[in-house]
Length: 169
Image (cartoon, rainbow, N blue to C red; front, side, top):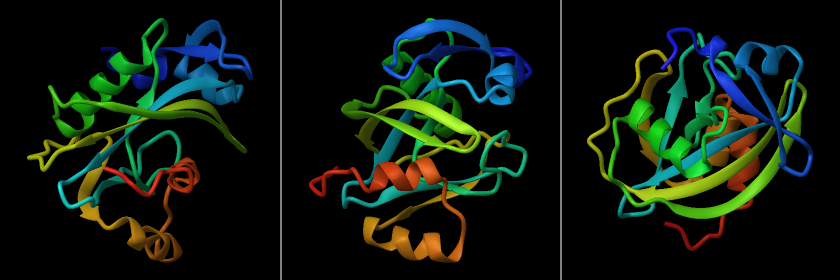
């Protein structure tokens, strides 16, 4: 892993999610290039979702609540491998079974991303990556809209929440 995340090489794709190259994360953000990302929704056995408060040093959505573990897919990295890596790095989870839910494109000012959404079930314990996560907690899915009215939640997370089948986890 590169010491400076801004220098990691990330997969760049076109609007149809076809790989077209690799650039550093810094260039991807500066030029608002379409990239790939993974989103892993971590539920407990009662169906609550583990959400994380992002650190204020994150390159996008600093200090927001994040509904998913995950992140930018590295150059030539398969989605599943990226999801597993991000779970290990961010939450200290390894060996959990991931279910692929769907792929979706999200775009807003400063963020254009093809995301692959996975889910898993885990009660923890979690080892939070201090560089990326201040703290986390489980929340009922019905409480997320109220949380969003009170505190910022990542826009891409809110967009994927609206696409979730209500039969999860």
